[in-house]
Structures are given as C-alpha cells and as structure tokens.
Image (cartoon, rainbow, N blue to C red; front, side, top):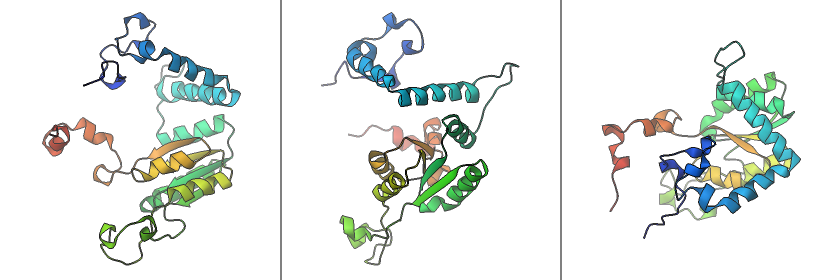
Length: 224
C-alpha cells in the first residue's frame, strides 16, 4: 500500500518551495507533513561554522550561475567554482579522494589547485594494497575471475587518511557506487563531488536521464 504522505519532491507539480506561496503546497509536501524536521534543520544553521559555509555557498551560487552588474552571464566550470569557493572559505589544505582509473584527472586537478595556492593531499582508492579476498570475495567475484592478487578499493582508508591529514575540505573524484558512500560515511570534513564515475557516458551520468529513446529504453521498463 503506497504511503500517500511519502515525500516525493521529484514528482511535485507545484514547487511552491521556490516561492512565498507555501499555502499552495500539496498534501504530501514536507513543509506540511514534516514541519518539525524542517524547523530542526534550520536550527543547525545556528552553528557559526555551518552558517558561514551555507552563506558562502549561496554567494557562490549567485556568482557562478547569475549575472554580473553589467548583465553578463557568469558561468564557471565546476573545477573553477570549487577552488573559488575554497578561497572564500579561507581553506588552505584540500584533500582529494580519487579512483585509480581517474589518476590523470586527479593529477591535473592537483596541479590546478596547487597553482591557485592550495596544499593538496591526495589518496588513491587502492591505498593499503589489500586483496579483495579480505572482504570475502571469491575468485569468480574478482575482475580477473582468478585467485590472483587484486587490490580492493579502500574508501574507508581514504577517508581516515584525509582525516589524519586534517584537511580543510575534500574533493571526491570518480569513486565507484558504494565506495563513494563508504567514504562519505567515514570522512570528517565536508566533501564535494568533482567527478562521478560513469565510463559509458564519459563520466556524465545525467546523459542517461536525457536519453529516453531506444538506447536506454530498458531503464524505463517496469520490473515485475
């Protein structure tokens, strides 16, 4: 039995949250069903550090996606937006947690950030050289389909190494689905995502959402 009050903002037809007309919200809008949760969330901004982070993020939003006083559209690529935000926050040491498959991208980003005056600490996903058998994988579960050594991705180690380095802010580059979640669960500092791995679409997973034609028709078929 579906829950009629389940929050489903992605299917909303009103979107009154972007206006002052909240009285027009649908019945399952969290502004109606979960007002206590929203009030609790707002109280978090009483923390001066979080408040400043949120303030600067909103300023960054206006500067990178709005218009200048002369009417010129100001659009920055995410790489530039990230280091501009880090400068706004006064960060000095940035952490990179990256997939070995995106080593070139991580190296290029490191060079860019260093040229902008940041100290960069970077940790590869295979750090620790732990065989996948240590987490219960059988030979047939490995990419090689053999009992040969195959290093597991180690996102918890990546997080702990960046925690130990006392980074100011972290950047995630191409960790696999699941590995990224483990990293975010164990990292202490706030983290932004630079690249989401998707080799099929050139690391642009949104491409699938724009292609409802025959190429990705299987994604839109209901399962029994």
